Picture 1: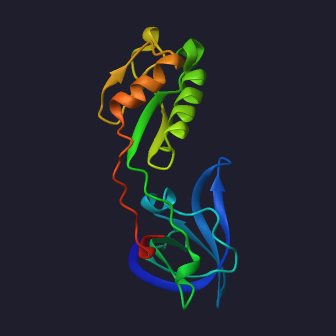
Picture 2 (picture 1 turned 180 degrees about the vertical axis):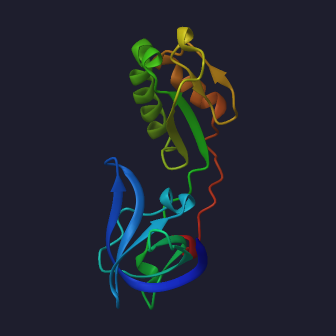
Length: 187
């Protein structure tokens, strides 16, 4: 497997979405034709899904060549507006905190779905949906005491009811979260 850096320019054609909601990469129209570029994880969460099709982008990253499969894979580390279109690209604030919620059947049977809905509502009410991520996990090894969740400061909770969520959000997540907005170079 050979690694090299690449830099290419092209028109944004479309996003590549997995499982109906996970942003994985971009399709670009380049001088050599249509090209798929996988996005590094830090870019997957900060990319503006309202990026207009046809926008010129410059992509910098690593190129892997697998000689056994005779396949080249491009992975973007930075995406920038190309030419004079830098003002066209909008960047979402980086999500800075994560709440982990068990998604296994015991926790879901004990109110996990209502818990997720309450989390989304409480974050939205406090305008925190852009700075706090709710992430489903596998088993947290406390099935009988579900639903289970872990707050961003690593505090674990079991037997949580949906009505308790607003209090937990207020206790563990400051509404004055400092958001480090990525530069255009990190679109």
